[in-house]
Amino acid sequence: MEKKHKFDFLIVGSGLYGATIAYFAKQQGMKCIVIEKRNHLGGNIHCDLIEGINVHSYGAHIFHTSNKKVWDFVNQFVVFNRYTNSPLANYNGKLYNLPFNMNTFYALWGCTTPQQAQAKIEEQKAYLNNISPKNLEEQAITLVGRDIYEILVKEYTEKQWGRACTELPPFIIKRLPVRFTFDNNYFNDSFQGIPVGGYNRLIESLLEGIETVTNMDFFFDREKWESMAERIVFTGKIDEFFDYCFGKLDYRTVRFETEILDTQNFQGNAVVNYTSHEQPFTRIIEHKHFEPENPSYHNNKTVVTKEYPSEWIDGAEPFYPINDGKNTLLYKKYANLATTKAKKVIFGGRLAEYKYYDMDDVIEKAMNDFETIMETEK
Figure 1 (spheres, rainbow, N blue to C red):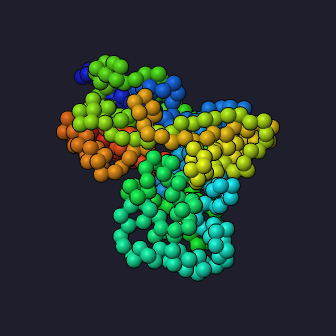
Figure 2 (cartoon, rainbow, N blue to C red):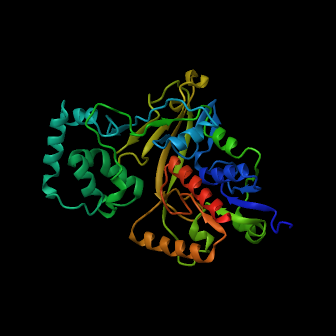
């Protein structure tokens, strides 16, 4: 019997979710086409090669996971280096270690033992009387005390989200790592690193042998693309897919200001956060420190990027979903519509699920979703 459609899968978006689904579909002998509205593949993990340095075009991406299945999966395609994420915070010219650890507590309070640091935090949060935190400010003070909140959390977070900390939900800060050891490793995961040669190698390997089209917006010729495949994997904005019928979801966006500097080493670290309102940007990334094994590391050029968060407007890149009460309810309406009106469409990834994902989580989700698809095919 002749196939009704040219492709088994049309995949809209070439980020990690779409590329992972495409890879598994090809392994099963299915025919896929991936379309991408940007002029490159890879979504937000794309790198530009500048002065021999892999520049993270859409902000720092450090791969970290405790999921060995995911770690083994990505290591099939690329070699990862041993990069360890140890960011610094600059507050009015003074440097502090992140995540909040004994080095931070010593710099702020002179604490030399965990017991001293814990006592200081308990003293500074006592006025909350063990209430359940109602907002980000109360949650942060409960975790790290008022001093650290005021110096290293408050202004940085307000720049990032464009809202007062008292107006932000507490869950945003719940994943904030706090430890009472002299350990500057930001993540607690079993595995972390950066692909040697950049993330483009990972995406290229996932999409090897699969038809791809860049500079192609699904919505410019939607009927044509929908008619071409048995199933659609959609990784764009779910509200746009349904023509904003319930209204638009809110996002935060980021403007990246990248420059080449005539120096071998600008800041001595890949990531330095600027936690004061004195600077309009939230952090400076010096990309060469992600790959010290790269021969260009010792060149007398470096590339730095300043990040400027702002409200999302039409035409800007939507980066971070704003999971407050209003937007959560609105997303649920679209999710329900997806279940009832778009049964041949799989919605996956940060924009389609209106959810912040780490890279390992989005790969795991794509793996699980593909298994579910295969189960329904039986």
